[in-house]
Image 1 (tube, rainbow, N blue to C red):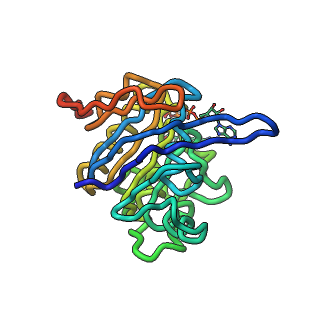
Image 2: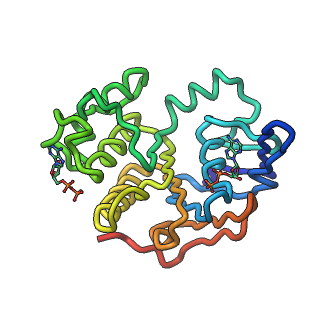
Length: 229
Ligand code: ADP
Ligand code: ADP
């Protein structure tokens, strides 16, 4: 079943006299439970797609359907609620709060959330039961990203949006993070959308959406999906 649909979505930014077309008539669909990789060069429009999906930004024109609702018609207040309740975010540089330990970082994110999971349980699930009381500065890059993933998952979101989640990690650590995202997708049926410029990541996806200069270059169903061991 279809969870997300972009229909002729365009996004323009106005900087002084200059108009920048970040997205131009973008169309794609994402099914429930799918793991999608959005692939493209820097500046192609990947983050803009993710920000619109998460309700952090709005399209200039077109429709963005999530479930059976067109979120382009939503108020700022409704988009904020969507962001808080339905969507988990994972960023390249983790964005943890430096003066909170791992457990507190996860708890802080779930405070406003009605149906959240237990913070300690989720940290255990990502393999960090021994790091609950460590501060971000006391954790390796891979561990910090796992805290960030736990923080996103604790909200029990229907949608997990990841922007270059392995961009700051070495190959082996990055691979472990991708494995974790695959497990989350498989075990919780959470829809995962991962944007990256790194083509080597694409084989882990059910669907690969290639973006180029604000448009869709191709959408491929990956019949040869690689499970990370
Ligand atoms: P990607 O994530 O693929 O690197 P982005 O979605 O960040 O690409 O950017 C797409 C285009 O939109 C780029 O030309 C970028 O410079 C422009 N852009 C993105 N965000 C803004 C903004 N807030 N203001 C102006 N231009 C922006
Ligand atoms: P990685 O191979 O992921 O980069 P590191 O070599 O940075 O890992 O860290 C290895 C271990 O040392 C990790 O378990 C991490 O928690 C711990 N560690 C790293 N930096 C610190 C620090 N400043 N204080 C305490 N423990 C640390």
